[in-house]
Amino acid sequence: MARRMLDASNQGLLLQFWLATSSLSKGKTRMDRNRLQHQAASMRRSLFDQGYLDEPFIQLEELQDDASPNFVQEIVTLFYTDSARLIQNIEHALNSRPIDFDKLDDYMHQFKGSSSSIRAKKVTNECTVFREYCSAENAEGCMRSFQQVKQDYAILRRKLEVYLQMVRQAAVSQKA
Amino acid sequence: MVLGIDASSSSLSNKNLSVLVVDDDPLIRMLHDNYLKHFGLKPHVVENGKEAVKLFQLGIYFNLILMDNEMPIMNGVEATKVLRDMGSTSMIVGVTSRGSPSEMQTFMEAGLDFCFEKPLTFDMIDFILKELNMNDDDDDDTNN
Image (cartoon, rainbow over all chains, first blue to last red; front, top):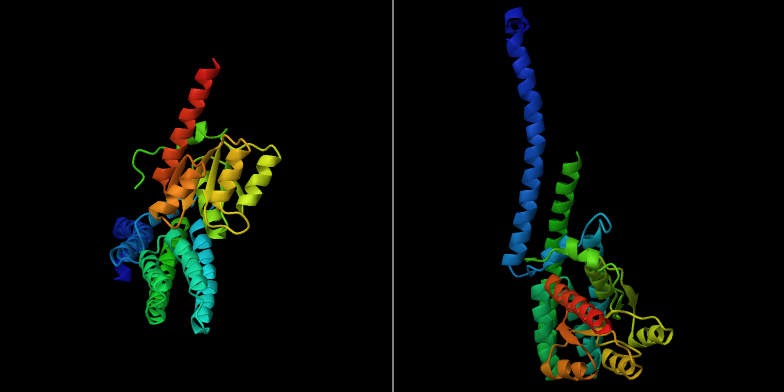
């Protein structure tokens, strides 16, 4: 095979082969980038369909530009920090005796505020449920609901990190 | 969806508008700050109602104030009342997270021009800016 390719009459074939492989590798990069973008879009779609995020999340992504190139990651990180602090405060308040329902409501109100800001639909809705138990001073209801909030939050965080990583990978492959 | 909103053209006319964001939550401050920048504005940002009142007392005028309700030291209702009593003619838009009709009404009665539920969207900001630009036009007419 190699001997045939070196044959002068097959130089045209060799040239074609070289051209084909070089455009294939360019095509492969294009395919990678498209595939990554498509994967990221699918991931985001599933976050919407499963109710973890609300569609106006797209507006947050539109706020990211040259002036604020890391806006989405920054605001999501702020959300994680806020959430960690509030979850800890709520745990503490729920473990205190007697339970201070006003304080609990205040914490959960803050949590609802930040989760609704980043369009975390499931978490926000569960915060509302919690607050209803709170105003009824139903400790057991609060604890059950809080378990759900923590669960929804943990799943959202995991999925969001995967999604943002996909977005980053797609962005990096564009620059390659 | 951002239908019919041309942020790039409105950002030209918005350059001269001064905006103040009043909110105790750093996440909301960052979010609203970026939203407004997206529309070509450069907002000032403060943490509570008392800071907003201080700015007014210093003679600093804002075309638009985005006022959160639940804040420590001085909340949105109090701050709005104080600002109006002191003669502020800024457009004050309440941004509330409680959302109950009675709370929004109390907030409106304090002297707001509009009241929205958090978080803001492009549509809401577009609406507010259109109202602002309309008011500016009216002022020009009465001055002529």
